[in-house]
Length: 189
Image (cartoon, rainbow, N blue to C red):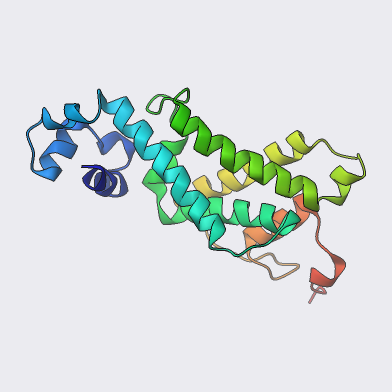
């Protein structure tokens, strides 16, 4: 049933995933999902927990980088996941559909964000120097990546490169927020 629920989510978005629709897609009676999930919210919360695990797997596939590069891997994976799976990405942030007090969901969410903050702190010269609050920097970076993913996935923003550096837009935005090593910057054309 979960597999069918994910197919519905990918095809129709969060609002298309109902208990009846999942049962119909799975070829079972509309009452059968009740044996596994008390209600739609419980089903969607389980799906959101699995989505966070998928996201963490995506971060892990970017290699064993550390420090700021790991923080950048988290943000790039967040954007890539949102663009690859817009319905799944939307579900993550729907407090009206997902139980944000659910321990399994919170565990995945906190695991992702806490590791992201640790990586960001380990790689940020400004945080190490005491010039920036890690929570503020982390919130700004996460919000920027999230906003960019939403705007790209809805077609409001198009994929473009930075006119100055030639880097993909997301990478250039991260450089602006987190700073770039001088040897990473390209000279203006």
